Image (tube, rainbow, N blue to C red; front, side, top):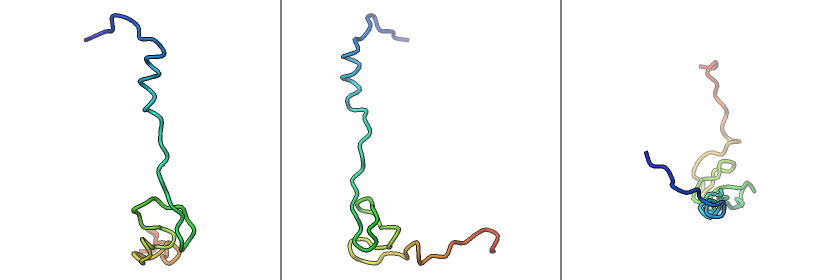
Length: 69
């Protein structure tokens, strides 16, 4: 197994780590519900995507539980 012959400096280590930071994902505020939603995704609060109703919103759905079957 390979081992380094010389120790790498802290500057060299930090230069390598400059790209490791987490980046925030872009989002938009939905016009219908006002909720923050990721781009190219249906808003789960209103059920709209690009101004069209794609699915029932979370408020329209009734939660189902295993005991109700």
